[in-house]
Length: 375
Image 1 (spheres, one colour):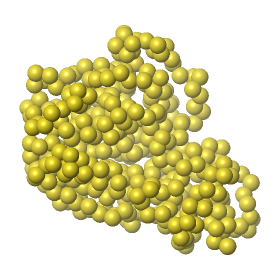
Image 2 (spheres, one colour; image 1 turned 180 degrees about the horizontal axis):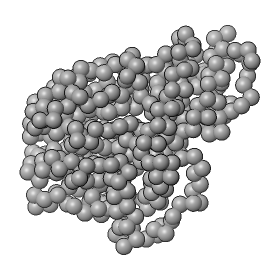
Image 3 (cartoon, one colour; image 1 turned 45 degrees about the vertical axis):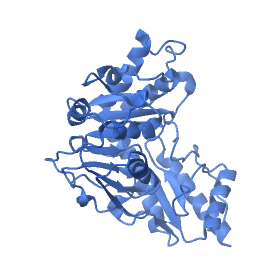
Image 4 (cartoon, helix red, strand yellow; image 1 turned 30 degrees about the vertical axis):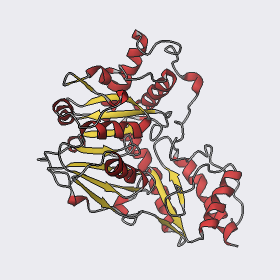
């Protein structure tokens, strides 16, 4: 086939969006256990389902003893802001940002909470700031995987085991696709709609015993909205971490999340989910290595995300947009344009719900579209 010959084989699943992400292979909404629909989330059936969302998550992720998992409002954003408003202000805070969402947490801390003792460490898209600048006596906020930059933290060696501050990690596009060093992380947040291909609007909040101790011993100077309050009388509201949610969740979304967790178990658990995502990235690595006009936005090989894979192309921004429109029109790839604040390029989701065969089928179409817009 010549480079500009239109391919004939299309991905069986053209959904490569970085959020909400592709549903799991074989997904069928009719297969969900919907016994809780129309029931109160506070009913015995509702509590069992929400409790499973917490306990099954902890089991599959292999969380250390004493770590708590809760379902909270407003997706990953809600989970991050909930913990920021609840624990920050006791000690100085270091914030690391290298893409739009990390920059958002920096804005929260400076313009909304107006923290006075704050250090910001930033980097352009494609790069990481110097993570070794983290002070172990300060609280620290960072994203594990920059969803809009395709840059991940390669390890947690820079986090001290003797730290006195809390590490707060936005890991929404990392959990279930990357190894997480839980003992180094005091607060981890994520949402269902990323690696598991779940539905939006619900966040997950994972707390270490150190984070619980902070919540029970510190009261911030600012008022807390009801949906942010995790303590009562100086004690953690344990029910939140047993499925007794602060506000009313969608039980249909809960059923969908439990289906996704069951699917992870069926393929071999967390190691298999991580391996699927890493294998998908390897396919794209081979593609980039063989084409002089395609590049990873991430500048260092060990920092390339294996979920939100961001590519830059040796084309003008308008030509990149043409490629995105061409592939959408052909029904080959949906929603793969770079994030609006990121450099022009492609962003191809490679999480565990995406099949390697679909990534492989996409690549000839990238060659074709590139040739089309380059003529």
